[in-house]
Length: 387
Image 1 (cartoon, one colour):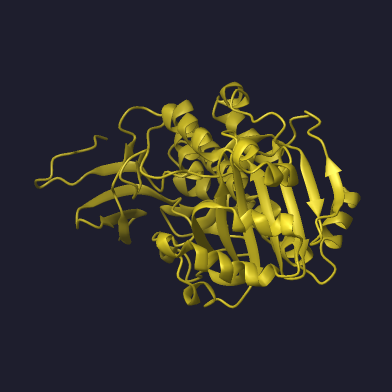
Image 2 (cartoon, one colour; image 1 turned 180 degrees about the vertical axis):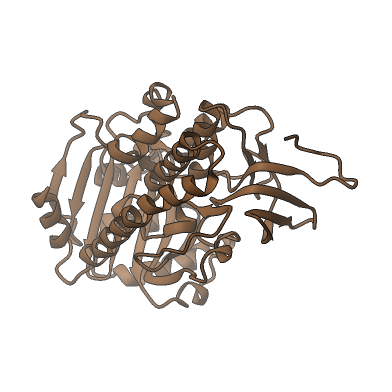
């Protein structure tokens, strides 16, 4: 089956089309490629380098690392690991260290930079596999499991198998489910402290070599040290959904935004307040949304979902990227194992997907409550003690 690129009477047709070139969609495409199966990816970003991919990810042995093994990229991934990044400290609001763990080097959950991991996956795909600057606005069934997908420029393509790997606000999800993300009750304000050891030595000491949790009732700081020596801080607040809208986060009003955030931390230790007060650059606000725990759908011919499109959850179990990659590898494996029977492949994939994602979403929801309850950080300490 050929793919047509001429824009005349022919519109492109792809046997397999993946919407979204995030970690999940890329892992799916790569594992298909390893199995000799081509797929086309469509992504709304203008190019591979269109925006920073920010943040460190801990890649779990049983999910993200398993996916990278299926993708024949495990050894390349090992070269990207941020050594020391598994170190962790838990502080209370008075900056008292309640727990500290060095990076023991066991590699169970090594830290890598999201952008470097994405580049590794992108580099492992054939040239032209990703159609950049292609914002999907909708899709409709054509019968027989085929779908037509419409882009923002009004062009269309058709596909025999459509996979929504397009995140929280998926344009493919409505084909299988009427669920939509709901506000979790937590909002993040993200900040960076650049060249921390030199410019922000006190903050560098507070965060340590890996991950920091500084937690109190209904609020806290989650921070990690990045490979480039900067600190990335997620300020978490239990606030109404419209709280972010009440603050001007434009770059030239950063001092006012910092003050509005720090109002919530007036009785916290100065060394923790400084994580926001001394931040470099603009503050990035972000509401945390989730899909219902146990989100599932009836089998719809020729279409399925993976990653956040299927099971958006709060980041408090650290599972989002790992699950998306694992979903991609599992889906690719199911397709490769059943040549010519896409429906059987999708049914097998979803049968395992639903309980797996329900368990992770429940864990994330429990963890969110545990992190910010009245006696925080005690809930987190108890959880680690239980492990």
